[in-house]
Length: 202
Length: 366
Figure: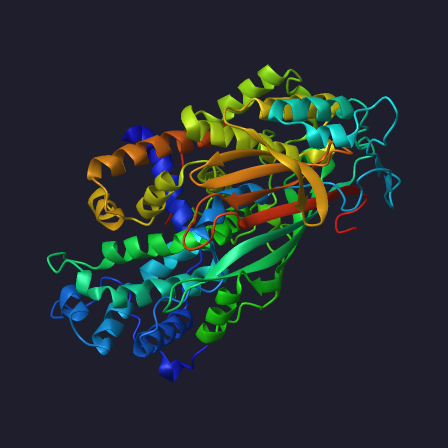
């Protein structure tokens, strides 16, 4: 672990002042500029990777993602407003190499070996339902195809259909059909557990 | 869209429930990334599993098997419950005949004749199922000249409550054992890349300890969590059992066949100690009828245990279930490349697993 004095700025997403250079400009710049790309997007990529492979492998996965992004920065389409979908795509490819960790981690989640969902509703019943839902999803995610899983994880991370299409380099219609197939299965799994309604995370 | 609201909310919960980065985590990763970009050293993927091995690894997470070194005879356990593999008698099919059989169905038919005399574990006393799984897999470390491959082993112990199926109450894993390069060329690359691939780590997962309130009910009984009651509900006719597997997979075509094979193999390994002779016979015969299965001639060696292998090939990889011809039990399974995959030569065992399974009195007993 680094000491606090070495800690680079880790601004929460969305707080960049409007005058900040765009991702495209930074990606065309120096290594220091690339550091700014990291600071801008690493937290989100971390959450995505951590959600898939857990804390044991997340550091390597995130580091690999950004190291590859640096190598391929010349291939980034500068007309894109944000590098984030592109980074999600790289991360998704990197995560393929962590499938063992991913499967293990999902199993852990399924068995409830995780800390309770942060931001879950306060009411105990709602929290139990949310925990149950999370565990059920982990079980169901094991049973769907990798392609559907990729789309689902990106969707869960908050990406739009268009961003998912960009990240995975597939047509938007494909995103929607995969997502709908996967959702139908997940919905059935939740229904089996009697979960028909959930309070959203705070 | 509205029909998916509950799913979307659940997905948001799912994402939020994941680990969050501390500033120090990101700082350390940032340091690593910038150091790597400075060295112009491309992607170093330590401990990354070869993608090819992954599809079985998912299944392996719940694999359980019989004790090592019990090709015949009886294994006594501290609790007095016993596994009782069939001993050879004069009116049984010889292991030689099984080894010589040339088709998957002929092999399974012969194996099944032995199953008839097999005694299942005595499960009535309750207690815990203790499973020791040993898995060897090819891993890769990336570097400037492409991936360097090495083989490493994990040993995982699991304890599950007998009447609740195979969902573990306690898991202990040791990873990174007996690491060695796949080929001399890989050894040279690993040395050049400076990859530390020999790190051994242990890991304990005790669901009761960190989050007692999350203990919750075990997953529903089913193929993924075969409780004794669920297994007793399965048909013992091979065709009917096949229909159950097909329904669970829900997909036709070659990929559906692959998944049905995998589902059968997973059940045979996961629930090995829990299978009645009738169900085991039906399961083996069902596996033998999956389109495309073949018998691997002669005997194969799985972690030092000789068995006969029934295989299914898909996309350049062959998955083999290995059965002990002497006891009719499943030894484990392995995956072999048929074509070069990501620089791994054909004929490489990229994943293999064997497990021991026995009944113990208390959680954590061995």
